[in-house]
Image (cartoon, rainbow, N blue to C red; front, side):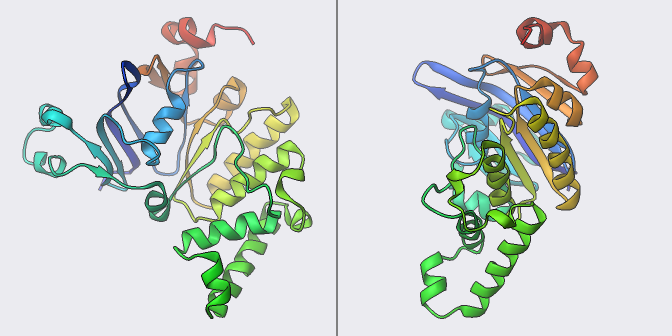
Amino acid sequence: MSNNVLHVENITMQFGGVVAVNNLSLDIPEGKIVALIGPNGAGKTTAFNCITGVYEPTNGLVEFMDKPIVRNHPSGKMKKIYKGENADKYLGDVVAMTPDKITSLGISRTFQNIRLWNSMTVFENVLIAKHMRANQNVFSATFRGNAKEEKRMREETMALLVEQGLDKYKDEIATSLPYGLQRRLEIARALACDPKLLLLDEPAAGMNPQETEELAAFIKEIRDKYNLTIFLIEHHMNLVMDISDHIYVIDFGKMIADGTPSEVQNNPVVIDAYLGVTE
């Protein structure tokens, strides 16, 4: 078994004549914080959507904990990629797990645009995620007699809110919170699914410099506290350079560079494509 929590190989996502992700390969080692950066429209969120089952890629493979969760090889294309004694592992039927199944395996994510359940309280937003992780409908758990399990999930929900400093807002409607707290709540909701891998899509979007600095500390804190591996998309370069162990850079859906923060920061190809643009 490798030490990579996530392995992405030759993923391509095509929409008609537009290739949004082009033959993308990357690895996310266990316990690390890895960033995916690139200009707007580079294909970053599309790549996340392929990994989490929102999109079925045109071609490629995604493995989580060494097991395929997404695989496609139309017209035998993958046969050219996989050779040798392990080739048969990749040449079976197309695998396209649904997002809920992928979540149940241990991958959680947040979104670029906050997607809280806006008619529910802070507590209810996290509790629903607990039920989803348990593969159990909230109404069946409440009204069909599994009181012990319901009590446990409510206690765990409250404990998570306390840990994240959100307990005093538990009865407030989620979307009434200040923007920074809504971001924190969305991450808390993702943590309620007990992930091994947490995908964060632009978690600092809309935050001021102080909030961004606090978020950087928060991401490192939850990585250590919950024994997480974190894969994030982010445009705030100070945050990316501060917290990332490794950075991948894509442009027009293709990988153009990867390396440590210092290597990426000084890569002339990256500077031309992205980092050279002054904010």
